[in-house]
Every structure is written in C-alpha cells, then in structure tokens.
Image (cartoon, rainbow, N blue to C red; front, side, top):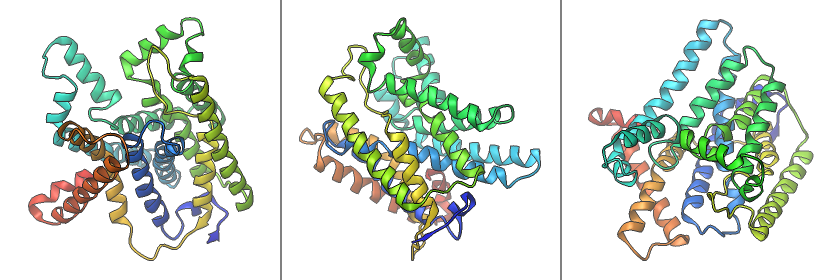
Amino acid sequence: MKQTFESSNYLCIDGRRFDVLKIILSVFVVGIHTMPILFWFRPALRMAVPLFFMMSSYFFFLKQSKISDLEGKRNAYWLFVKRIVWLYLFWTIILLPYIAYSGEWHNLSFVTFLKILKSFFFSGTFSASWYLTSTIISVSIIWYLSKYFSNRVLLFVGLITYIFCCLTSNYLVLYEKLPASVILYKSYAFMFGKPCNSFLSAMLFVEIGKIFAENKIFLANRRLLVLFFVSLLLLFVEAELIRHFKLNLSKVDYSDDCFFFLVPLCVSLFMLLGQNFISIPFKTMALRHSSTIVYCSHFTISSILCSLVSSFQRGLLLFSAVLLISLLICSLICLLEKNRYFGWLKYAH
C-alpha cells in the first residue's frame, strides 16, 4: 500500500479500490435484510449505507471543486441528479407489479395517491430505494446551502440531524420521554418516512464527503487503524447496551439503522482506503455495476423467495440464495446490455 497525502489523491491513479468496497458494502446490505435481527455482526453491516453516502458525496463535490464557472457546476449537478433519477425510474418500472402489490397501491383512493407521492419522492418506491431519493435530496441541500454557509455550519446541521435519527432509531425508548416527541416523530414519518430511512440520516455523511473532497486531510495509518478498531469495538458495545436495556423496542416503532459510533467507524475506514493506494490488477467497472444492481434488486428477491418457499427464513440460506440470484441477474444484465436491442439495460446501474 502506498499512503498519499492529499484529498484529491483519494481518486489518484484509479478508483478501483472504491469499486471493490462498493461490492463488499452491497453484500453487507444483503446481509442486513436477510440475516437474523440478532446476528452478532449486524451493527457493523450498518456501515454500508453511510459509506455509500460518503462516496457519492465525495465524488460529486470533487468534480464540483474542479469546475470554476457557475454554469459548469450547475450542469454537473443536473447530470448527477439525472443519473440517479434514471436508475430510480428503471427499477421502479421493473419492480412495479411487486411494488404495487406490497404497497397496497391496488386500493385506489386519494389516500393511496398521497402514499404513492410520498413513496416516490421521499421514502422510495421499492425497498432500499430510500437511499436514492435521500442521496438526491441531501446532496441538493448541501450543494445549495454551501453557497451561503461554511462547512462547519453544515457539519453542525448534519450532526443535529443524525442525532435525531439515532434517537428515533436505536434510542426510541429514550426519545419518547422528551416533550411532544411522539407527535414530532409520527408527523415526520407520515410526511417523509422514518427519519433513519430518509435524507436526514444522509446529511452528516454527505457533508463529511464534501469536506474530504474540498480539503487536504491526512492522518497517519497507525492513528486511523486505532480509531477504526476502537470505533468498531465501541459500536458493538453500543449495540449490546441497546439490546440489553431494550432501548429500541418501542411501542411506537422499531428500527436499528443508526448508531452513534458508525460515524467515526465510517470516517476512519474511508480515510484508510482513500489515503492508501491499493493496486487492483483488474478492471472493476463490472463490480461497480454489480454493486448497484445487487443493492436495487436484493430485497425484492428476498421477499419473493420468502413468500414462495416457507422454509426460507432469515439466515445463511436466505442470504446465500438472495446473493446468488442477485449476482446472476447482474451477469445477465451486463451480458444483454451489450446487445443493441437491450441497450436500455444500462440504466440498471
């Protein structure tokens, strides 16, 4: 490994190591949705989505920092949004029959129409798609506000929103004791979905990605490794304390998405990977495409398998089956999109 010293060098020579990380993280996401809730490694799997937010933000704002004119920045922004929108629309259309069935959209009414609008613009149409809508919203907010506020202010805002997401996720039992907390939570969830599965949970990590893109930040590997392993240990301690005191077993809702120690864990891992050039001796574009396809397809595959085969329960068998089918779909899409009649499959990734 070769350690570099500039933020711009996070993408120096090539970004293949980030493509490898993406496919690993997509496997983590499959694990979140297929392994048992009490799976011991589950808290660490939760680093996947925050790191996805950081990488998307980093690459976007790195390109922004290299563009001098305002018009060029706007064009780059709209290209970024357009790419995610096409990806979102592709999978929404492909999965529409299942989405309509599972979301009870077949009961046509004004309330159903409002539910569809909320899903499409905020909470996502298909399971796990909230990441796509949240990426667009959070990057757009940070991109716009950065014209008027410093990174310190935006980082503070991100910290506040993430604390709110943690309190309404793993610490919901404590959050309920605050005045008017339940009304605030239910109101937000009604309009945008769960805070931990909305753009609020992305704000902090998007801002961190922006800071790395715009500044030369360096820490010695020894310190980063200490930070990483200490954060990982404290994350498991945090998860165990939450489990022991049943802090997320609220009557209002349940989720285990947001942990406080995910922040230093994700930052240290991102910096370790960024500051050290790791030579990957093969092209990784297929891995990058596969990570997106696996992420977008896995939950629906899991749901269908569980509904068709009663023996499928959360565990290693379901995880293996979903991952295998997802990877087979990746191979099929990557093969077919080379044909001129199936060129539209490029929007799958």
